View 1 (cartoon, protein in one colour):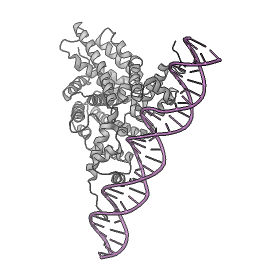
View 2 (spheres, chains in turn cyan, green, red, purple):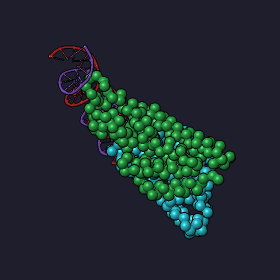
View 3 (cartoon, rainbow over the protein chains, first blue to last red):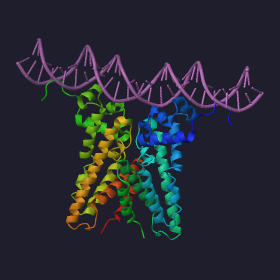
View 4 (cartoon, each protein chain N blue to C red):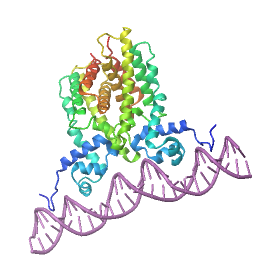
Length: 195
Length: 195
DNA sequence: CTTGTTATGTACCATACGGTATAGAATATA
DNA sequence: TATATTCTATACCGTATGGTACATAACAAG
């Protein structure tokens, strides 16, 4: 139990609200009034709790990865590589078309392009996207060892293919494409599956 | 020959420079000093020639569609649907990984997300992306009539699939993926081709 | 050469941005 | 109850933003 006046808001709740704003408007499009109003706190409280706008954004990234995007890790538990991909893409569509959150993937929408000052954040998002791709590549290597994928498969190429699809789905979702229409895309994409 | 002092810069050249800035930094990330410096003119000249920042952006869209993105229309002239798609995606990769222009597709990077004031521009880019998809759908309908695609093909689904790939390639290119790596993705994607 | 017209360049404006100083309110310890 | 500590709230700061007034320069027409 800390000394002093207790905080009047929940940090994680506020972080979730901030995430939604960044997700919808991007780092540069989200202003401090946008953020603090959504978080239900005023500016000095935000600065005291999170540092500044950039630090706040960085904290929302972890919140996103471990929350909304947890289906990526979960998908790896599927028994076959094809089921992993199907799980990954289908659940991704559920998320990027959900009416409860902004459309698209935060790791794509957050800062695809930006001015110079926000470039470190753009790089961070690129890094996070690539981490997912690398993890899928590892899962494919395992599948190859298990005989679940042909020996001549290039796991990195295959993982990149899956993430190209995922990122494309994010762009389309942000453009208004429906869940049903995107699921048909996944159906087509899975026809390319090796073996 | 118009009356009055003649313009000291070429409008189309200036437009190309402005396009590059918007392309790299997005509408909101591009500031007026960024733009006017790249264009080699000062602010009042820009306002006199193009209206304002928003109007300038809108004009760069047409410039992009008819210039850098002309391969989309050109691809439709290929004899078969599969060759159309191969042409479209391969040339897209050349463009989004070119060292002469910013990485990625301007229609995706320009304003994927933004604050409220830029939302009309975001909508415009969505519209332009969808126009390409609709044109490809028409080309597929023609292919079906020619027996080049199976009768049970859904041309809209197929066109959406191709553009999901294209948009995903744009995101990956912006993240630093090489031309060779993206071409391997296209190779995989084309395995899904019907018939 | 004068006049009308259009472009340029400097200097400026109002506003919105991210960030902070400071005074007061709410709690724990003593 | 007194005091130290932390959070909240108003009000503010410097800067950068998109946009413009105005004086000047360069051309065509008369």
